[in-house]
Image (cartoon, rainbow, N blue to C red; front, side, top):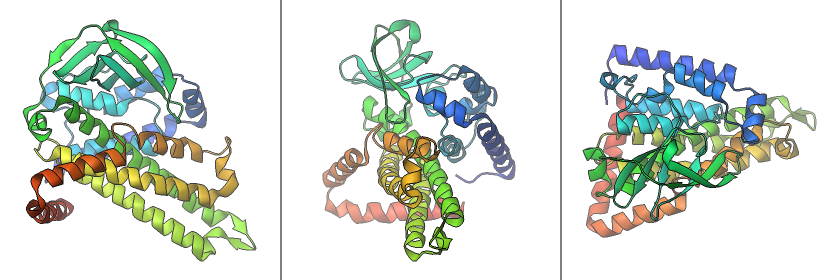
Length: 349
């Protein structure tokens, strides 16, 4: 999608404001409290007042109406600052339901009426539930908490049962992209949101590792002067850049019939990169990076948690492989050519 001058300016302003808001509001104390299971209502209010949950919703429906690439870059920023709130879920709910409310929302996939590991499930006002028969919008009053847990980043992951809700029709483009599978459709949306968050968290881990290597002195010289460290940082930079690029590419497919495939590739590639960047980040920081007092774990724990949510890289790799095999070997080369052409065109836009 080619943006005009006004769209580019608006997106830049929103991104800059969001960056400053998150940088100032998310302190170490906020992250530590979130690790304890606290839902920061005051922080959510700030995020909501900035309009971030409505970034992907069109202006005609009361949203900001950013282009998809710019909207998902806000989720990358959220990951870069370790925002401990369901911004991605709420942004997707607003865009997919066409509603402009500012209450936190959740996404859930279910085959048997049980909603497993819903992010902030006890704190959201509404859940968008995908099941075999379609989608339902379930308000908190019709949800029952059956168990509460956390992921390894300390964020709440709650099991719920739904007793009601209102049917919601899938957008036509998304239904076609998912082969009329409502669970796959919502899973792909959630997967891209998590991939965007991981891309941001990887940027932060890389920045921390580069800064540490430049300032930490061992054997009379900065760590950054050692060739082995240089190689590790270069590898992490490569992985981080690849993740950001593939997320941008998948976001461009929002509204198109190849969205699910591109979201699957993005989640797979970002998941692969996340493990490598987290490992390098800890290798560069050594023992210091494993301490509770250091901030590194706020980002690496999120990377390792988000990597498995809405489908791990291994699960999406299996799905991609199955689709390719079903299409037949003759279609593979043309698929690769088309994908390369698309990415090159988007890079020039």
